[in-house]
Image 1 (cartoon, one colour):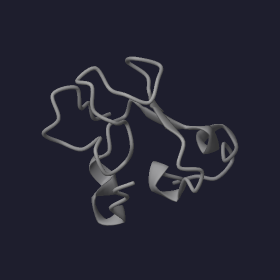
Image 2 (cartoon, helix red, strand yellow):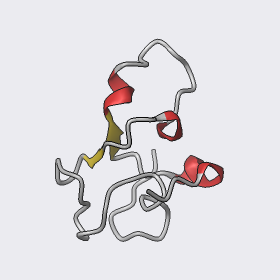
Image 3 (cartoon, one colour):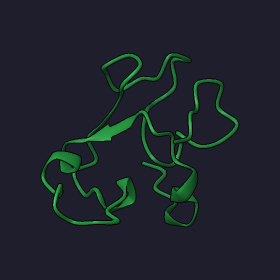
Length: 70
């Protein structure tokens, strides 16, 4: 996994991890804090994005055709 924590501010808003549902009360929590290594894309509902590439913080960055910001 290519987890680049310096670029997590630009992570796609459609990237999800099960920890998003466990840390609901923690303000400021971001996807880079996920330690499970299990991610999925809201567009496809699986581990690959619409472009066929793996959905994970290191890949779901600006420049990817399916990338969305808030």
